[in-house]
Image 1 (cartoon, rainbow, N blue to C red):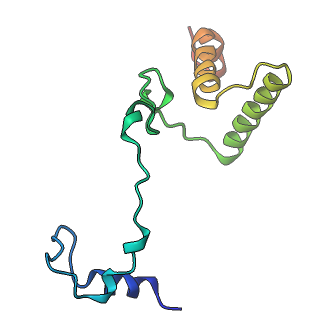
Image 2: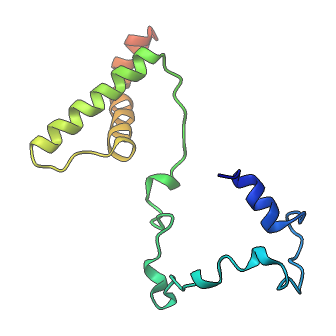
Image 3: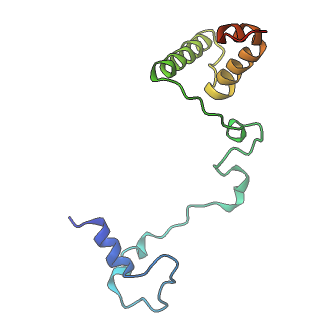
Length: 126
């Protein structure tokens, strides 16, 4: 069994990224390996259903990311809370909740709606 790097090196020679393939490469035996393995797998008639990034502008991936620096213990507690609430939602027949779109957004909304209680917990006077 040979090293895949050696096989690639033999197949592509000393070409560097961005260099064009030599025009007359037919006399080299290493180029005949894949001639029987050519097939078309793409269907251009259905371009609207191609997989890829979610184009929905309200999708979670388009939202601003704000990191939270938590201890391992806190991060585990937060994840456990999410998993418990997600499981309860599934058991109730609601299909579960998404961690970032639903859970984290509601967590932040809850803190904002309870600003006075949060201030008290932080020791901030009114």
